[in-house]
Image (tube, rainbow, N blue to C red):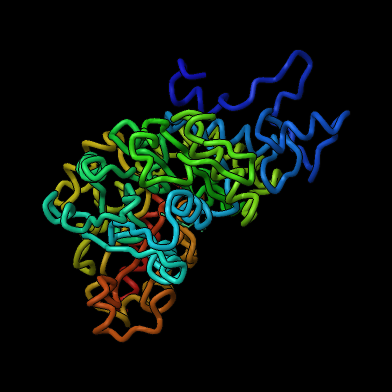
Length: 429
Ligand SMILES: *Cc1c(COP(=O)(O)O)cnc(C)c1O
C-alpha cells in the first residue's frame, strides 16, 4: 500500500481480502481466540509470535483499521484506542513515568489540558505549558533534564492556533525527546505531521475520521523515526528488559519502527484496557473510506462561511486560518496547502445577549458540543462549556461571551450562509 497515493489509501489500505474473502473489513466480534496447543499460545504471551489471544490487547478488526491510519500518516505502526483521550494518555504515558516532565503547547483541547495538568500531575508527571507562538529560545527554556516528550496540536481545538511543527520538532530533537502531535482537526488528508518531523501522531477518531458522529475512538501512529536506543537513559521502558515478558527489550526486539506501539499494546492496553470495540472500528473504517472526499468539502464550507462572516457588521472578528488576515495564514499554507478543517470561530459584537439570540434563531446549524461531523453545528462556550466563568474571566480565557464556535458540515454552503444571515439579522430585532 505504501506506493499508493493518499486517496487510494483512504479507500483500500489496511485490508486486502483473500481469494473469496469478504470484500468489507470483517467485524471480528470475539473476546478471545482459539489455539491447538499451549505452545502456540505461549509463544504469543512471550511476544515471540504475533497473533491474537484476547481482545483487550488486540483485535484483528481494530488492527486492520489501525494499519490504514498508520498508512495514511506515513508511520510504521499504529493502534486504535477507546477514545482520543486514551490515545493522548497512552502516547505520553508510554514514555513517561512518575518524575518525568512534558513540554506542551498551551493551546490544546480542554480534555488534554486537564489530563496533563490535573490527572497526570497526580501520577507525578509534571508539565510546562508553552505558547505555540513562542520562539525557539523560549521553547528551549521550558526543557529540563527529566523532560521526556513535547506535545502540541496541528490545529488546536478550540483556539484554532496552528502549530509550527518543524520548529517544535527541531527543539524537541535538540533535547533528545520525541514530538507528539495531535492531528485530529486536519486529519492526514490535509496534514501529515511526520513529514515535518513529528515522531508520534495521535487522533481523536471521534471527529472527522469517523465523520458522522457515530463512535468515540482514538488512534496512535509511530513514525518509526525516533531512535530510542540513542537516548536509552531517558527511555528505560523501551530500552531495558521488561520482566513481564521474560526480559525482552522492546527497542531491540521490535526495532525503531515497532517498539513504541508494541510496548503501548502489550503493557498499557494490557493493564489499562482502553480498547476500541471492533464494531466501532468498523464504523471508523467506513468514515475513513470517504475522508479524502469529505475533507475538501469541510474546508470549502469553512472558508465560505469565514469569508461571509468577516463581512458582517454584527461580527467583530473571525478566526479561521484560511483567511489572509489571520495570524496563522502563512503557517497554515505551509503545512496545509489544501486547507485545514471546517471549524470556524467568531465573536458577535453584541456579546452575551447577541449570542443567545443568534443561537436561538439558527435553523439549520444545530446546538451541540460536538465538532467535525457531516452536520453543521454551533456552540456558544459562554452559555455551555464555559458557563461557570464570569464575563471578565471569559475574556481572560480568550473565549469572550459573544464567541461562537461553528463546525461546518457537508451541506451546501449557500444554505449555511443563509442560515447564518437570518440568525444575525434576528439579533437586531
Ligand atoms: C475531541 C478531541 C480529543 C479528545 O477525543 P475524545 O475522542 O473525545 O476522547 C483530543 N484532542 C482533540 C484535538 C480533540 O478535538
